[in-house]
Amino acid sequence: MPITVILELRLKPEAVSEARDVMRRALKDTRAFAGNLGTEVFVDQDDETHWILNEVWESVEHDEAYRSFRAGEGRIAELPPLLAAPPVKTRYVTTDI
Image (tube, rainbow, N blue to C red; front, side):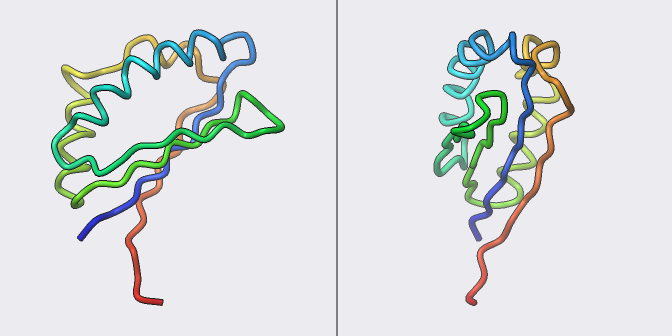
């Protein structure tokens, strides 16, 4: 069953431009990762330091494999210094409501 992962990022104001470059490169791997059905980035129109990444995965297992990749060999080392707060990840399932 597909799942949606929302990743909320809060960037340092002076880091927005660099974060765009870092994420543009990193998201190529995300979008090409096995099980990724789509990844979009939303930027708050009133606050360019507030980003939401919306990822759709084929399954929880695909998402877990991706998180393991990012925790290891696919780590985005350039990102943490650009953040004003730790990222917040929430996983959602689609319901029949």
